[in-house]
Image 1 (cartoon, rainbow, N blue to C red):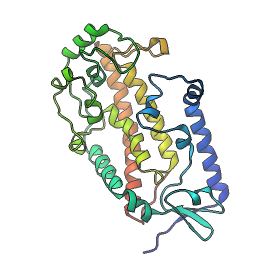
Image 2 (spheres, one colour; image 1 turned 45 degrees about the vertical axis):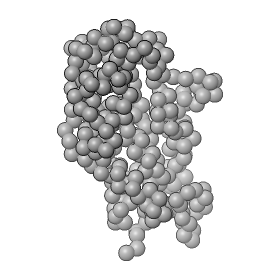
Image 3 (tube, rainbow, N blue to C red; image 1 turned 30 degrees about the vertical axis):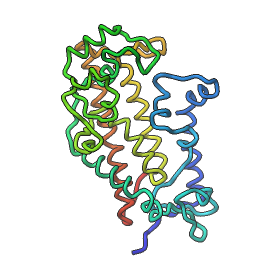
Length: 293
């Protein structure tokens, strides 16, 4: 059955592309300035380093599946695009031939995560477990409570981290304290929408699905990931006040309440973006589905 394409005239898609580039330039201005100066930021640069992306990659605009750009478009020279007469579109068949396994994994993981209730009782202890009884730390930033005080916080709280990519950075001494043993294989069974790292990873999955992900959705995921990262580090054992971040003292009742309130807000924002990413996967496998940017 032929696929019905949403035809975008040049004035529409060029305006969307320009608006996206302007938005990304604003979001990445700090990172680009630091890179030019050879500087590094312990909070903000995580999104570029851990997810292995550059501002220039984020800036490139993609319309998503089943959208055809009329008139001359640079996309015709990009991977996984096809030119048909006077239009350029994502070649869904070619994309699925190369990335079909990835699409199916992301679709299954995100759909399974969306079905679970959000757990908000972890209080960000994954970051504390990453420095528990450690001689060296990942960041050259002092610990707010010192090493002994950090160890005491971990030992005074139940540790329940369900996210494998956080758990794998636990110190050897902290591994045995975790009530869950997440692995890569059990990721679809354990990931839950209250987890800050699962929410940040929506940006990763948006990138994994690119260029099938509409770029406006990628930028939405990036913005959410940046906000989550800020809370993640404010609630961490590191003292980031010299960088302008007031701590969320999760070792106190007030800090726990602040953390949980923010965590719930991020889970709500993440649920919307997770649904949109599942829609992208559905549209790739179902020619009749469309995707909103």
